[in-house]
Length: 365
Image (cartoon, rainbow, N blue to C red; front, side, top):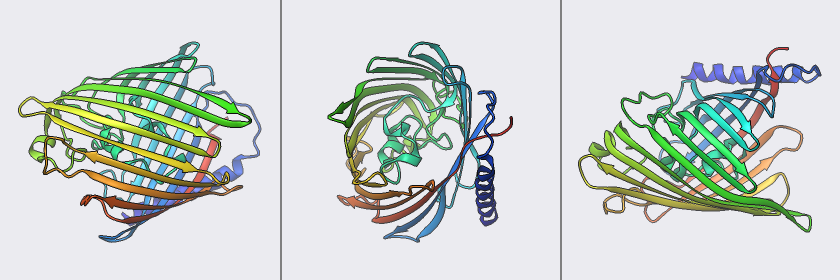
């Protein structure tokens, strides 16, 4: 594993050096020529229980192409290591899709990508107000903690935007990206939201709220990492109907912004009683200056309201982020504090260094 990590770091430095030599070329190539972007996140974790560790949290490379108003494509890879995860030490394909505009505000997406479910899951990890997405989001979005899927699936989606309304609906294979579906699915997902952007005396403000729903029949799905604390005989080979609901809201005014989400899942096994999981989070961020983000968040999750032995997971998360002015470098310090005897969580400090290696480097002319 050590040699593989050294190789990834070496590749990251090589890409960074390539970007330095690419800035002087001002030619105008075809918009369909692939554009390469890449960034890396190094993380140090110091839990109150267990060993501290350095890790590559994310090393991503993205290829994009196509004109702004025409057919576009996106391909994205990820590598991570030393995170005690089943996806460590291997390069995975996350996204591979084409976006086809059909009319004003109407577009179709085909390939492998995130189904339109949730709010936080669509916020890029390199621009989060806190160090990472909530544990709740990772558990409750469609295909969240499902093997090597990275919350992705294969299918098609239609997107429509009119005024402040945004509507998306998709039909997917249902087994999760990079996974063997083995009869799971299909998966249907839909999301509707309304919002706006305004200015109050020169102070920008925005808001948006919406709902999303999904439905899928599972033939053999391992949901044990999503529904921790429940009987693994049921969750590790779940067969039955899996229906989920998400409600979200976000708003910002000047230097303040915040958001909240609620998730609920109803799982009806082909044999056995119903499982009802739900949870929510709320967070707020304050930017005293452009380079600094101060953020606070609270989240809770109950894996099944019918099972008293399954403990609810609750925690606070506070974070300080600093963005350098002339260097694509971000530093984050984060502290997790469990509440209510949540044995699955520990008091943990996390520190992260994020560096953008490449931004818009064309691979050939």
